[in-house]
Length: 124
Image (cartoon, rainbow, N blue to C red; front, side):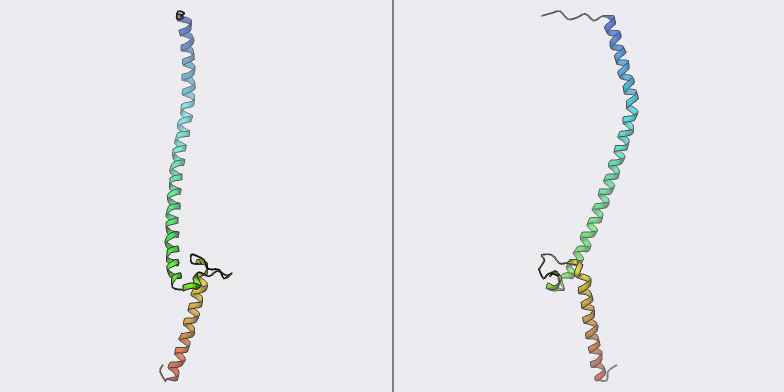
């Protein structure tokens, strides 16, 4: 086995110079990295806020869709039949305005008939 190399003052001076160079690079880069890290933390906070906003919006959507589905259940099969005649597994929420309009027209017609009956019977 060979003997270890003797460390000379020149070696120490070279290492100290290299260490100073590394320290200078670290001093130059560290503030930039701190700014990048701060920007990244802010981006993560913003991302988390958007995720929270999207989650809240989805909960709202789910809630109102469930209300429409409950209403659709009162219309029976008509709420599940698409324009091409096929039956869907879930109610067709887009048909709700049409179904409500038809229900209102039917109610108005029945109310008119009832008014006519009352008039024939002499009731106001």
